[in-house]
Amino acid sequence: MSKSTMPSRDIWSVSRLNSEIRAVLEGGFPLLWVEGEISNLASPRSGHSYFTLKDSHAQVRCALFRNKRMLLRFQPKDGDKVLIRARISLYEARGDFQLIAEHMEPIGEGALQRAFEELKARLDQEGLFDTRRKKELPAFPRCIGIVTSPTGAALRDILQILKRRFPALPVIIYPTLVQGEQAAEEITRTLKLADQRGDCDLLILARGGGSLEDLRAFNDETLARTIAALDTTIISAVGHEIDFTIADFVADRRAPTPSAAAELATQNQEQLLARLQELQQRLGRTIKRRLQEHRQHLAHISHKLQILHPQRQLQQHQQLLDELVLQLEQNMQRLLIQKRQQCDRLAARLQLLSPTRQLVMLKKRLTHNQQKLLYSMQNLLSHKKLLFSGLTRELQTLSPLQTLARGYSITTDADTGKIITCCENVAPGMHIHTRLPQGQLVSVVKKCMENQSDTIHPPHFPGK
Image (cartoon, rainbow, N blue to C red; front, side, top):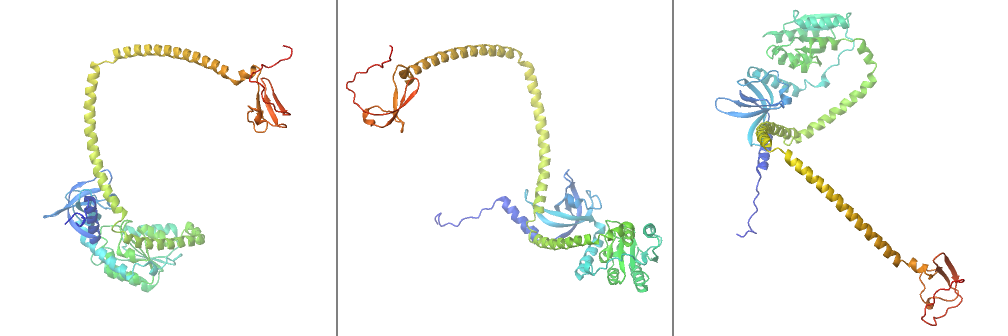
């Protein structure tokens, strides 16, 4: 087979190969939950973390970037057994298979967290979290019911805020367990009772902070469906600001803390004045609605760009940058040592070869060259002056002005300016222009005569 008939070969570069493999890995796998033990944990100054996740038979490299690491509720270290939610990727610079961690938690909370996520996803799909089904908080509640432990700090915080902001507001306390095996059932029963009695137009479900196990009662499915079915508006104020429960998502409003729930439930003077700005807030709501539409459009576009998302490219470059920074620091240290040794050697040689003597000789040579240059410049200037004087005299000798000074003149056609050299170029009545040594003449030709002889007569000056 000749070269012209041979099929062309599609030759891939290593960069292209790694890029295509990374796209296949990231596009072919969803987010995964992986558990294992942390080892070889490294945290450069960039704030990212790189570690190995291993079990008894295998290991895999992992990267946890700074924006996700800042959300962790604990400080990971070598030897920790953790559960991570991660996506599969490939570090193109080295061709290493790795996991990009999106979330990390100690292994003990893994089962509860998975159950929480599954229930959250199912209820969200059913529409229990939809903001359109949630009721607005009453602007001026006639009575507030508090469903919580009668001995907890959450109740004291709420009563203190209510007394300060709206002391005349009636409050009914519905005591219940907020922790333990029977807590979810008792909270459900208490909420139904408060809703059936109808004494309050606003309920606050409250509890202080705690671990995922402590807040387990508020992640109960039966409790969530009970909250969604209440006719009474309800605020969920469970845990601290960083704690989220299923009750928070189902309730009409979530408060980050029990104290914040009391702030939301009541009005004060500043809030009453803010009501007067409702027309201005309509514009804000319109903008929010438009932003929501754009967010949905952006989410649609982002879904199309999952494989080639710029953030993933940035993370690859960030990881490469961390490695280059470490290499640069090592190279700088090595180069600094080499330069310091070279400087010491040069300093020793410089002490043996002092430049003082050479400097004196160079100064003498410079003085001599300056004098020689000055002498040469003076000679050249004198020569040029003599040459200029000779050329000036020669130019004066050849100047037509010298000829005019001897009594001759130059005659031209007054109309065209052409020089007249013979009678054939002149006709009677023609205007001519004559230039004299001193002054000029404009004349009219009366008669033309040919020269009678070639003898040139000198000009005649009367009186001489």
